[in-house]
Image (tube, rainbow, N blue to C red):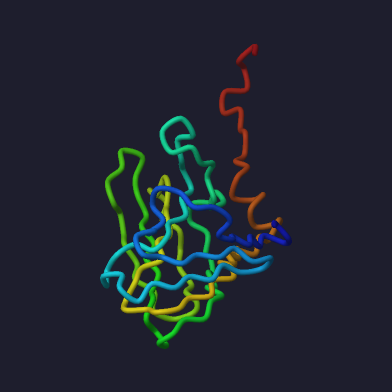
Length: 168
């Protein structure tokens, strides 16, 4: 859903990054319920990608494209038992796959600037000893407010014919 530069990312399918060993997973209308008290800490519970190869992974990209240099706010909407027993990891990468930056988010939201040399990113939901999780969505909002007058003036340069005798 895109509304005024706002994207709602939900968890709609199981794919190969979803941790399923011993997991009870239920998809409801507006949330996903997950139980697994024996899952090791530090494991990826689920992953959302901006880039994906359908032939390899059998999935389409689940994250929106972000504009380089823009500021974004990401809000994570979930409930977990015990409290603070999951965290999110955002991995920013270059075109060759080299990691630029990894951000660990233990709170419900984060504001960050998408780097100019970033090509792709992914968001991982990580385990820190959870027993029960109700995941609703991830909300990504563009915080960049464009001022049309300032952008136009910086993008257009003056065209000056320094040699007026040229027959062009």
